[in-house]
Length: 140
Image (cartoon, rainbow, N blue to C red):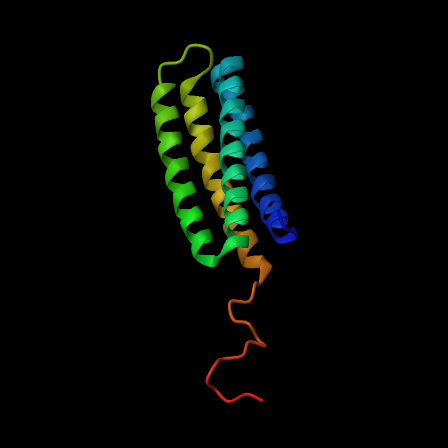
């Protein structure tokens, strides 16, 4: 990962962790230790899924912008489908509180997405090369 990617990762992970910790406290209050366990699993799931997705997009970005876009769309689709599948699979779990798990996953996903968008906006990356030469324009 490049330095910019690490900054985006931090910008997304910190608010997600904060939201996740609030979710754990709320889950303990309303569902006890099973709720806390479900919330912790939800935080871990979002953290792993979205970190792997960001790493994949970062890697693809070093190859080409088109590859980066394909990786972003593909990882997003895979994450959404896997999260939906896991929420459905765990809806009747007894080892942890499924509702605490589901609500934490949703809240942390929103927090990660907002943090990641904010992180990218703060990078101020150029989308035009200032010194780029355009072929056929007669530059010396």
